Image 1 (cartoon, rainbow, N blue to C red):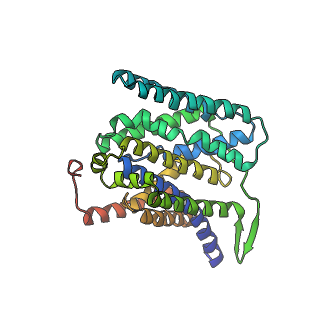
Image 2: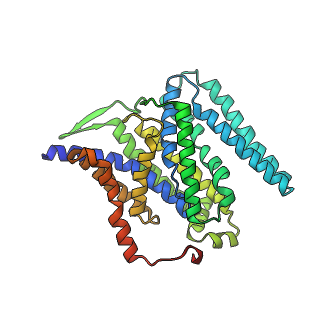
Image 3: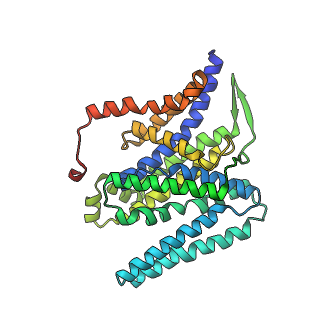
Length: 346
């Protein structure tokens, strides 16, 4: 390997590391607020990319009908819960939130799909379709068992991943696709070829992480999420709605996953299950951060990206093995230096 090759691999590692950083932050956010290890994170990466591809081909994306189906299930659950508790306000809210709004969204999207839309508007429409799936998934799968053990929540999360992956295969089929890049520009900087799309990836990742930092430090909702992450029971005693906090956490994580899918779709072929492997690498970065530290998770994501890039050059057949093996020394070190706390004692 010469110096130029090393620089090219480092450039590729930084770009992919920026995506892993977004996913690591999203996984960390969901876990600290809800104790859910968000295994389906990768599905939303693939769904947003495939939704964007469908919009660019002038087709109504299958994710729209998936959102309607999930919203219908959530609405039925809210109606049942409201009827059981004799809470008419909850029933009305469930019908409006999970029934009327998704139906109105479907009508608008179906109307605008045949129209010629700018690239950024297409991206916005894709986000509008995919992001609501996060809180709807939380309502269906996690809200009623929010106080269950971490192990049970993990089992439910894996089941949700398998269900969404199967639906993704049914909706999109096994074929892969790419989308139009946000920028076709290209610059030569010394031995490096810098593309406009790579700058979009890095800049959007940095801006998204900075926006999350501002949200957590300068908004009431963000501070409520931080309080829930620090002490869920204490937050409930102080009047913070932990159910709403969980829904907000899932919404933010889904938005981050959807943004990641839009950023990488022009750079790699996306199929219905591509996001799972990308999400796992984000999870490795989150583990490096101890599922607690956002800066360490971001640094871990950069390390994972660089390791992924260089291992693909030295031993491409074992690239995934090398990346995922990184988690073993991290877990060993943390098991030796972190005190063991039973879940019931937290």
